[in-house]
Length: 573
Image (cartoon, one colour):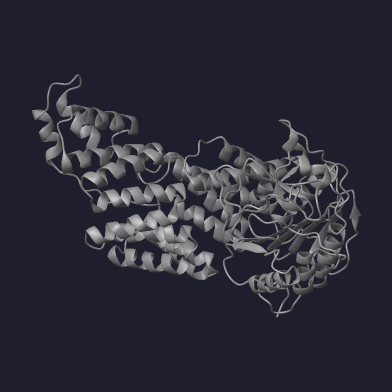
């Protein structure tokens, strides 16, 4: 989705004639190194041999490093792109090399550094629509959609026929809720270049957000056909990223429609492709979770079939103790607001917590009162907790808002975060984490920008090997010496998706208190404010934070991170 501004000295190939004799004909090395269509391995090899000649200096040598960086970029090896581009910048800074390095940082997910490189690129040369476009991508990666749209505007002004700039401006408009504007921009991208699969993939997401699953599937199918028939030759498009995105989006559309068989096939196809960039790895993390869910599930009622009557959303669901709730009689429909509420306190092998069951009941009641369909579980063992979680993730694929609330013990192991069932015995061993519920898996399963996801954890993540396990104090950490860590990923390569808010009862590095009354300080404040009519969710969490800080005398400061795409109201105005 990015294009590269290439500046190459015409004299490089000619200068090679003056170089010392080399095993490969000198007149072949220059064209192989500096021709955009050269296969990646041949390009890297030719440029490496030129560097080994040690006959070039300054700007000429910078050009060779630049082209070798282009070869690495084709291979998706962004660390080597950055290393060679940095050497080229040291030898002779140029607009092209800053743009290339910025794009590599973008593909690694380092958006701030990418923006700095694009800024430097713009200062070194005339205004470039390509660089404005690339910087817009980085702003979009940071979820600063206003700045992204402004840069795409500048890119389109410079090149009104840039299909990619129209497409990416449409993606940004979709992110801020302007579906009509998004559809207009993406339709224009398709008109400008009907051979591109990427705009069709993005239109797939728009149709799915509108509930038009047949159109979504049709666009996804055409995008996959185009990507297979003519793989993108743009050297700035990460290898395999278009096919991975196409299969993922079509799978989500099949799943939303209720066609689990085709969804399974597409998720398997997604996982069978080698991913190189952060976005593709995020898609694969989601595909892995969704494949597991649809594989275990019976086929739901088709989307175009009449749905049987369901219970009113506000009616209390049966409270569960030690077991997951029975599956609902009909799949959730678009527009449903669903919540998964779990409170674990009756631990068998670590310090029991008296309040999580009370917290879960209080939060569940507050959510039912404002119209959420709630799945509620108390003191769940691993089997029950896993089943309830998987049932919820499966049904949440059809919801408009999905909320997860967990109270109890939690741990962090090797950078991954786990929620603790009541029957887990925390002992060192390779299979220890298999007995817990992976929080990152829950987040990856909900990673879908067409739905609002809110995840709230009244728990701590600590070292489960600590000697203090058996005598943990009155907090929700297994060991009081360490606390929460901010989530930076959802498993290997995945990122916190657009449309998601995650909130913890305490700040990174601190512990969450269980409280001296019937509820924890955090959950008591949450249950009081979550049903306030007309209160935007982030404002609601601000009120919760202030109350917790006051009631704990600054010992506990709730923390949150948001990529929500607009204002979200849990209780209507």
